[in-house]
Each structure stands twice: as structure tokens, then as C-alpha cells.
Image (cartoon, rainbow, N blue to C red; front, side, top):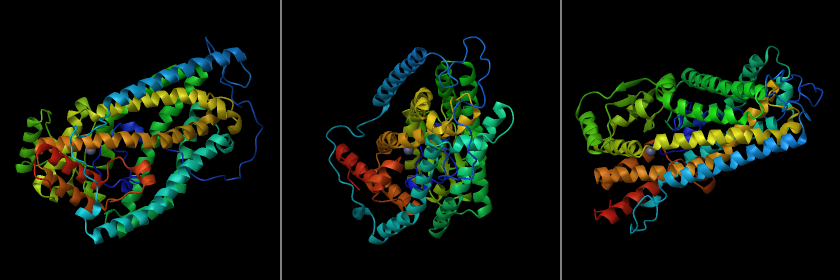
Amino acid sequence: MDDRQDTKDAKDAPEARDAPGAKDVPGAPEGPAGSTAVPSEPDGASRENPGPAGAGGDGESGDGAGGDGEKRRLRWEAGAALAVLGAVIVAVVAFTTPWQALAAGAPDVTPDPARDFTAAQIARAAAFDAATSVPSYLSYGLGILFAGVLVLTPFGTRLLGRLKGPWWLRVILGVLLLTALVQALRWPLGMWFEVRLREYGLSTQDWAAWTGDRLKSMGVNIVLLSIMALAVVALARKVRRWWIPAAAGAFTLTVVASFVYPVVFEPLFNDFHSMPEGSLRTNLLAMAERDGVPVEDVLVADASRRTTALNAYVSGFGATRRIVVYDTLLKAPQAEVELVAAHELGHAARRDVLNGTLVGALGAAFGAVLLFLAFDLVRRRAKVASLADPRAVGVLLGLMSLAGVLSGPAQNAISRHVEARADVHALDLTKDPVTFVAMQKRLAATNISDLSPDPVEYLLYASHPSTPERIALARAWAGLNGVPAP
Ligand SMILES: [Zn+2]
């Protein structure tokens, strides 16, 4: 529930900051098309047998093991569960998403960058967008290409076939190898992007800090992906209907990761301290109380070690919920900081992180069942018979990565509605659309936000409405509430 205006500068950021903690993480495997130096291997049945699968047995392991009727029945069951889960997700999303930000009767205000920004500002935003688009799209495309290679060719299976050791070690090494490979391939694109950020004065990092961030975020990815891959392979080795515990596990892991995210993962990337005593802190806490949102503290992150961009966010829920503002934001006029905080209070008041976590967790469970079904469709192409085989980790990571890519636009579309509601909450709370617009203009100018994102960018990256849309919303709010429009 990040307030970043500019969607694009986030893509290469090390933190996976947006709401359900784990949601962003499984985007691991990404990379190149075929390295071809891998010797071919005998096809078909896994080199490794799932082994004696105690009571209730395996059966799903090799091609042709278990009767065809039995297999069909297992698939039918999983398909039915998938349909039910899908329906539940649609229902929860339909129920929790604020489709209409403003009450009926609000005037129609057309977003228009030229009304609030100078020609020079608009030109600078367009130039920055053009300068960062190429590395962004290349990185995105590389991710899809690498995932596609892992899923649709034997490349990953053959590469991981060279690993030695017990199955669990090979799973971990497989995750490590593929994550490192994709990072290595994306590294130059990340540097290219970072150079652009520096040219435009948005980055304050040197290469050592930049590299440290990237390696830390890779480490977090490897740990989380290893946990997931170990769980899937272990279950596939033991349980015929492994999608049931896998779905329950994916749900639980997502909830736990989102809950502990602020206290376990965020401190890896930033230091936090309580906002110092003073009128700003007093006013923010008073505003929270007026809003009926219990807030004991507002944290300040040392974001200036990385960026000049302005931002604030809410993360965690229950005991870990926190409102964080970037230290860069504190230089803005106090009234504008209060408006940013009012927006974050909107997220807290409507339990947006908790709702997002619920949808994310259901999505993860859905993904686990889908994995069970989708694996069957691609295993012959990938030349690995079963997910009980550690060599199948490539297919597993590839499918997870593709699921992330495919669900991204839907997640963004939901997020934009949630963000619009938080804006309306801030306006209702402060009744100050003039400062709201001033704050939006400051954020956009400082963060060099894209003032007129093209439809593809909007679909792929925009977790927030564009700045002109947010300003138009404030004007519509003013019209609806009989307050002079800015
Ligand atoms: Zn927000």
C-alpha cells in the first residue's frame, strides 16, 4: 500500500514493499534463452524415484504409474477445487474492492496534466519515462522468456540434473542456481536502470550499496523460494493428493510472510526510528485518533540512503501494523505530510493490507492447485515426470514466475481502486483538496512520475492511479462536497 507515485522506478527496487509480503517474492526465475552447453540426457522417467511412499503411496511419480482412471479422478478433484477457489477469490475481490471511489453525483473531471504541470515538467517526465522504459521492458521480457524456457524446454531439467546429493539439497541448490542465473542475466539491465536513476538525480546510492541491496533481496528470494520448493517436492514424494496440503501451506505461508514482513524483511533494507517529538508527530497522532484508527507510533525510514523519492506506506496487520514515512518526505510542508499520512490512515482504517493478504493467500492456494494440474501439461516438454523429482524445480519456478506475470495486471487494477479509496479517505479526513493537489504535484515532480502512462505501462505497472487522475479525483471530491476546487 505504497504511495509511490511513479510506478516504474519501483520495478527494480530491492524491496518487495507492496502489501502481502510474500506476494512479490516468487517472481524469481527469469533469464535467457538457451544456453546450449548442457549434455542431453535420457528422456522420460525421473532419474530419481519418489521412493517408497509409505501408506497411501505415490503413484503420481512416473509416466503411466497408477491407472489412467485413477489419474483422471485426481485431476477432476483438483479441477473442482480450483473452480471453487477461483469462485471464492472472485467473490472476495468483488466484495472488498471499492469499485466506486466517490459517491454518485460527483462531477466528472477529466484528468489533464497540462492543467497542473508546466511544459518543461511534462517533457522531463516523458524523457525519464523513455529513458527507463527500455531496461524495464527488457527485464520484464527476459523474465517471461526465461520462465518459458524452464517450463517448455528440458533446459532446466538438464541443468539441475547435474546437481548431486540428497533430494532436499538438490532442491535448495536448484533454487540457488536458477535464481543466481537469472540475477546474473538481469544484472546489466539493473545497472542500466540505476544509471538512469542517477542521471535524473533519483538515486543516492553508490555501487557498493546498490549491489548489497540486490544481493540481500536475492537472498530473501532464495530463502522463501527454497521453503516453497522443498514443501512442494516433499509433499509430491509422499502424498498423492499433494495439492491439498500444498494449497493450505501456500495460504499459511502468505499470511505469515505478510504478518512478519515489517519486522523480519523491512529491517534488512532500512533503519526505522520513531518520528521525533514535535508538532508534526503530535498532529499525526491526533489525526489518527480523530479518524478512529489506533496508532501508537509513526516510523521514519532512512530511505534517503537509497533515493530522493518521496513515499509513505502501511505494512503488516494486527500487532505488526505500522505506518512508515520516508525521511525524504519530512522536508515537505507539514500540511502535505499530514495529507500523505491521512491517505495511509485510509489504508489502515479499511484494513487494506489484511484484505490484500487474504486475496494474496487465496491466490497462492489457487496457484498450488493450478501447479498440480499445469505440471501435467508441460512435464513431457520439460522432460521430467513428476514434481517429486528435484529436477522439476525449474518447471516449478518457471510456472510460479509466469503466474506472477499473468496475475500482475489484475493485482494492479484492484490496487488502483484501493488507492483511490485511500485518497478519498484522506480528503474526507482533512477536507483540504487544495493541499492534496499541492502534495500530488510535489510527489510527481520529485519522483518524476509518468504523467500520462501509455495503456501498456498502465496495465503492467500502475499500482496507483496516475497523478492527473488523482488530482481530478480531488477536484471531483471538492465539487461533490461543495468545497472550492483547487
Ligand atoms: Zn496508498
